Length: 376
Image (cartoon, rainbow, N blue to C red):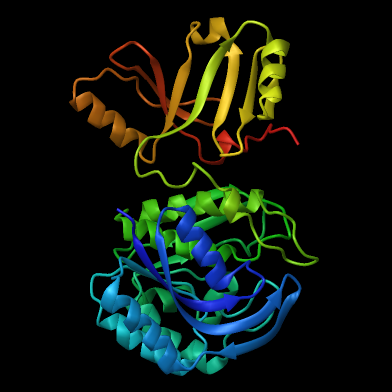
């Protein structure tokens, strides 16, 4: 299924955030992006030079046009433009029961420019009430009245920790039933982080539109954002865009994904030279035992001493829910090992296919392409 994602947000002429980041994210994650543009901005990595709000009736006309013909599986709301538009959008969304809605309460650009006045922020309450999840960063959460106040006004609340202190970024998903899910990952030090909030919200909406749970949608979206941060192209003299275009074969885990193969080696230098000559980029070096290479399409290939992999090639399939897949295979009578967290950061379960070919089902997140020991 191709999820149809309606994005209600402003345009970023620099391509780093807003509608442009949303479209890139939805497309890279296998969805169909549709838009209702609320404002046109002139901006680059240094800041926002001008903002032109789109009239409310035109915003609503865009929404009606999409809904009446193409249909919508999920909605993402970003920069809203004005209090009048916020209220009118809430009216339309209230008439779409059952459609997941992700509300990213955009107030300030990464550069520090203000993108919502006090009246617009006050009107956010209605949007929070129709939202499946609201995704403020820490300054936005404070501007909205704090965690307790926002939690009372919305479905679920994802508190993004990127503006916090410390070596780890901690994101917390507060569920309507009172439950809480936390994710913690090392902070990626970069000034090129423009558009991370827009990207995260659109990735969550794409997951919800595909039918994933909210928790799974958030988990997958976080991996997408972190990989895009690592792939930031370094454009501009300020807060540059992240690298949506370079996130491949990592985020869309609706089923087992073939993205890694390990082959036995006999002569490390000969094999490593051979694969570099083929145009693969070496990303891990552990001579004379192991090396990993990355292709332009995002797949990886490893070479490893034959005695360590029993002289067989191993095909790796990345799984969104490794434990659930292991259970399903065992119910079908297929022998598969218990998932084990290995020292290199991958959770792996081993099995063979009916012809005896070695397979590894795994979860690695960033560690497949960006292990801590990745070559510079």
